[in-house]
Length: 213
Image (cartoon, rainbow, N blue to C red; front, side):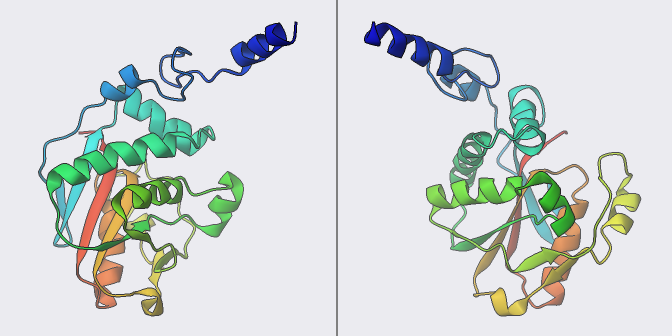
């Protein structure tokens, strides 16, 4: 009887794949769904403020669901898989050097509402794979901005104007790798890069999990 109840509990609480619903692997993302993710070509998708912007994959199908699940539906486990997907692409790029990983920051009000910064979760997992250090204090979001997805490029840049502030005391030298979930026009990266360069930090690479293009 005890074994019956243990088996029943295992069946009830077995993890299902967030993308397809299969419980065969008892995992939040099954191997089939992960392997269905496709990397972008190994070249910059954009060039903003003199800096390369790389995007690991297309914002559609499974990757879109994973990013939205992490960002809006508290599926924090997706950070592990997104970071792994990004790191595999990063390895293929063959970038040389040591970097500090900078997750795009949230404004304190949005962080309080969401309870966590989804890109900080991804950055923490990315650092475990890469050996890079996460630096969440170098650049802060000091202006509360409206959501970007309905804005044009010009409106996005205006929305983000003076949104970030750099604390030079938190810079330890070397490269800076900014991580974001989606890069559409590159405006968030552009404003952050300009602020970093204004403070004398020039060795910068921008890296997003996905691009819609």
